[in-house]
Structures are given as structure tokens and as C-alpha cells.
Length: 119
Ligand code: HEC
Image (cartoon, rainbow, N blue to C red):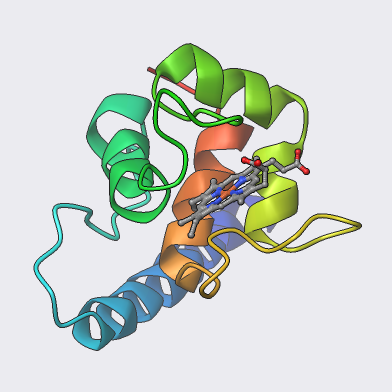
């Protein structure tokens, strides 16, 4: 009984993810190297491009809060600051300040964190 339900939930889950991603991609008219695929989210191919595109302009190597390297991003993540700022939770200011990332990108970041921040 429970066994046969699992694939249905997986299917529904992936349908929601894919439809959300399709919407986001359509919305962003500029070319992006960041895909909305949340199946294999790692730092090198997904998170770093996302940060380069949305954060690094203000968080380069000389910034007070630098997000230039994996270790720096990991430290901010472990402190709860990446999730806090991106979701504007608690006392954190929204990052990026100009407007929340798309739900797909937030989903990718959340997945990456839940998976233990793979490089
Ligand atoms: C337009 C500039 C700008 C952009 C783009 C931007 N930030 Fe920020 N961010 C700031 C400023 C200013 C601060 C205040 C701290 C400081 O002096 O650097 C800050 C602070 C932070 C902090 C520290 C928060 C705290 O309370 O300790 C984090 C984490 C952060 N940003 C993450 C991000 C992430 C992740 C992105 C991209 C998704 C991003 N920021 C994009 C300007 C920016």
C-alpha cells in the first residue's frame, strides 16, 4: 500500500518542480548558464554560477561578506545566513536586495544545503 504510493509522490513532486522551472526560465529573458534542474545541485555547476550572477557584484573578494569561494559560501551557509537572507527570514535583509531570487533558484539552494553542500 505505502510502497505503491511513493512513485506517485515522486512524480507529482517532479512535475511541480519542472513546471516551476519552466515558468522561471521563460520569465528570465536574458541568457543564463543556470538551469532550473534540481536533480543534481552542486557548487561548481549550479551554486557558483548562481552566486556569480546574483551576488558576486557586491560580494567579491574584497567585500565585507565575500562569497568568492566554496569555503566562504559554506561558512555563510553553516551560519544560516544564506538561507536567512535569500528567504528574508528573521532579522535578515533580503539578498539580493533588488528582489528575491526565483522560486526555482531558491529551490536549488535549499536542495544544495539539504544535500550537505556538495562541491
Ligand atoms: C546590490 C548589492 C548586493 C547584492 C547583489 C547582494 N548583496 Fe548580500 N549584502 C549586501 C550588503 C550591502 C550587505 C551588508 C553587509 C556588508 O557590508 O557586506 C550584505 C550582506 C549579506 C550577508 C550577510 C548578512 C548578515 O546579516 O550577516 C549575506 C549572507 C549576503 N549578503 C548574501 C547575499 C547573497 C547570497 C546574494 C545573492 C543571492 C547577495 N547577498 C547579493 C549587498 C548585496
